Image (cartoon, rainbow, N blue to C red):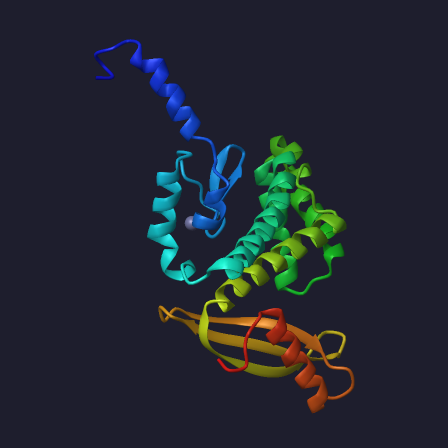
Length: 247
Ligand SMILES: [Zn+2]
């Protein structure tokens, strides 16, 4: 019919366009929000290509319904708000990322990651930059300009490490919310300044037998490894990851 009548074309498109506006109800029903005119899934942050109820519904039912159908009413609303908050925090990182060029940012995240992993002071970024510039001068002087665009200032590295830390924590929080059972392991160690610290590791399993084992927290111990300090650290970790004692 559509191919037979020329008039049917524009009329049809108008109706389709109306249907293609994001509907508020998709928020609670399928955990979708609208971002830059695209529907984005709050749970996995993927978008669907067409702004249609059918697409958002199909995505939700195929990927998330088994885990998220159990949330009803206020609980569902809380989940939506919580996920929205996470997405907007991520977006702030992305907006910042839009302003600078992605590969320079990637490079500075990579340096931040190395410094953090090796427990190096962030002021070492100056040494890294100097090394890079010297090497590039010798090997590929024509790229010197590119290298100078990598921002490795102390503030940037501090911000990058914060971002990475937050990302890791959010990931673990997400996993922890699915734990059916979990166990904690505590280990005492001292850092480079000789401060006693307790490292708290968590190992949990979800309903699909996916195992997660991660360092959850690192707390300084005031004087000795007395039980009160340890209890405080454990309680704080449980609260931070919303873990219940009965699991
Ligand atoms: Zn999704």
